[in-house]
Amino acid sequence: MTHACRNARSPRTAMLAVWLSACLLLPACAAPVKPAAQKWVATWGQAMTSQVARVTGRDGKPERDAWGQPVERAPTVDHLTLRQRVNVSAGGARVRVRLSNYYGRAPLTVSAARIALAAGHADDLSAIDPGSDRPLSFDGGKPSITIAPGSEAVSDPVALHVPALSNVVVSLYFDGPAQLADFHPLEQAHTTYAVDGDATRLPSLARLPPAHALPLTRDDHIYLLAGVEVEASAGTRGIVAFGDSITDGYLASAPTAPWPAVLAALAQRHGDVAAVVNAGISADELTTDQIGAPDAGMSGLKRFLRDVVDRPGVTDVVVLFGANDIDRGVDPAGYPNGATAGDLIAAMRMLADVAHQHHLRIYAGTVTPFAGVADWYSPQREAVRLRFNAWIRHSGTFDGVVDFSDAVAGTYQPPTLAAQQSPLPVGMATVCAGDAGLHPNDRGYAVMGTLAYNVLFHAALQPPQGCH
Image 1: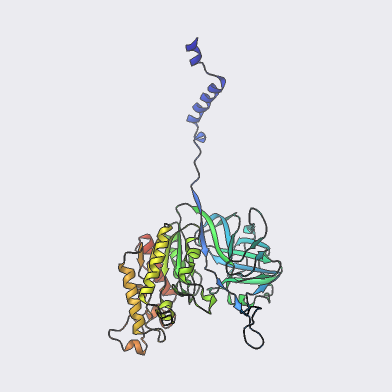
Image 2: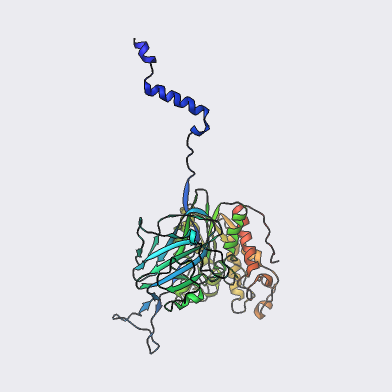
């Protein structure tokens, strides 16, 4: 009796046996595949700087508060729509945006926000694809957000297929007074539209008159929008380009021309899963704040955590700093006579230590030559550049070295002081320079972006045109 009971099948057991037998014969009964791991990664971003400025009275002197301190304010808007178009690097099926009130002195309320793909009209960069238009929410479904001073806010994720290297349009509406303290000054195209009233749902703003409250939009700055982030595979490399105007893309002809954008395009073209953020700020220094020039940003040392480490999904950082420090930085006596090589080396060691503590790979770029610029070059400054670059190349501190200096060097027209030196100091090749020899042109940026790609992805591509 005991033996019989041990071999008898209950109805549930018998049904399970039949189901298992059927599954062995049917492909549809295969075990469900676990979705691939995903992560959030910044696919576009810019480093915010301060638009807070001192208020000047009718007498031309700064106004002061009750304690004698200068009164400072940021541009204030009211009942205004701000629409901004940016170029993403990696794509994804879900997206969110990051808004910044880091430099704000008051809470900032965004009354409504939307995101859409650009319509692709070359003559109307404000146009969106209506079928892709999505409302953005915050804090689990709220249509608006108030961002505290010194803070950022990230929207809730929204389902939207964002193709790699596409254009995304973010529209923000401010129903009440709002101080736009955070902005990024340099853009390479018409990126920003501001109109009165709530126009966030309109497919185009081109026919509307520009808002009078924000005349600086004619200079195309990015306001408040610090990042666009997509959900991508866990293996996606998040690369931040961290530096000054040469990383920011000064004198580049289009948003696709700065070297970080070239790096992003090459990665997508060659099937590498990577997102690239440009965290360059024109006139920025690594070691010293630009006192009296808030739009030049705080020093690279101070902003490294916010602009690099805290970016979602970041795995790599390429650092290119030094030229501004060598020209303007504070010397050992505390005067703005130029930083020493020792100062720059100490600062780069700090960045490397912080990057490695956060398990990031860090690549150092050598400082590009500036001997062609008469008011920039001196034998003393060139000696600092050469010593700093030699340390970058040979110290073993970094996960890799991107030798930008060698890549853009070439034949140039030396000014009087440089021409008197023997041997002639290395200068930026005229064919790759957008000015006298400090900032590259599109050709120079293409060379730099190709080199950065080769170092980070162990490739051996050739740029369309070299500098030598």
